Image (tube, rainbow, N blue to C red; front, side, top):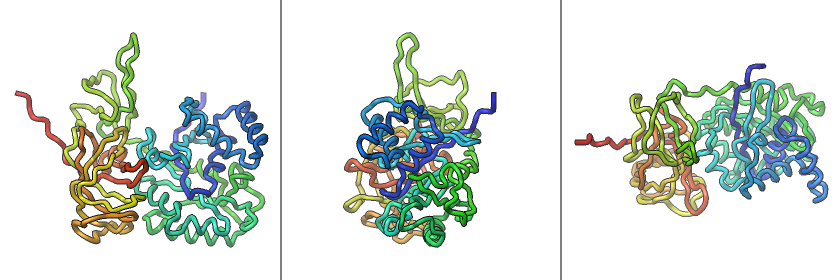
Length: 399
């Protein structure tokens, strides 16, 4: 028996037409858990529908469609392996709850692959002010994803034609932006690929002799394994509570920090609650918290009193923006204006939030998975946030 491979959670981000599905599908297809029969079935269907050229994206679309229809898909289908690691794709890009899932997903991302459309016009659209390349990179940084791989896709396109000058041009512009966000650009690999033809995906391409780096799979294999915070006190957000005949109540969740030991007993549990050890910095109900939020796509202006739903770990609870404390420069984090009257799309602010129902959150610096959230309104993610400090409710001693 060989040593079990370490697990790494991957999120694939990038502009809408950058080829995320084809790239992701290619990795799952070539190195993953999809059995040959399923692949052949998908290929045949893709061919019959005249979508042969999209076969990798088609694989992903089929999996997504089945998942959205509520058909439980073996999670192995979302996995692929390299020499050292087993990777799980946290969420298929393009899914309408993508950003929400990226934040609250039962597994948090350890690494992000930023896919870029390298074609003439395609790259420029993605990196423009309204393009998702910038937004997704900012999101990854805000959510504390430390490791990033940039994939320059579509290098087979006739406007690119495996050209080194295009690689250098894109690398410079993307690196400049990532540097502004605070990423150490020297540590970020920039890999030119074609998710469609497979160039530089699983093995080095002979069409780009000028490229001295590794192919995408080997680049992933070079990642640093994530450090799981076992030395911190226990925090276990509950995802669900099942009642199983003959066994009793079975809570399900992910141990985000600390260690769950046999013999710990709990009393009151339901989805969104957080289990912890009463003897070691136990979780407490939140009275209020201060957070830095980045408004991503709210159509209007947000003022004091705004009460959207916050998705944090497994809880989904309405929280009131009791006070807008400061308008913040997104890149430097410096205060631009104290007590602003309103905030709007593209701006970042410190806000004081008060949950409308019992909720347990923590400061991001203490317990990262319990300190980041998505703000949901009008059936979309309007903002993301990082919790800076928490005011906890003290439980009155029973007489």
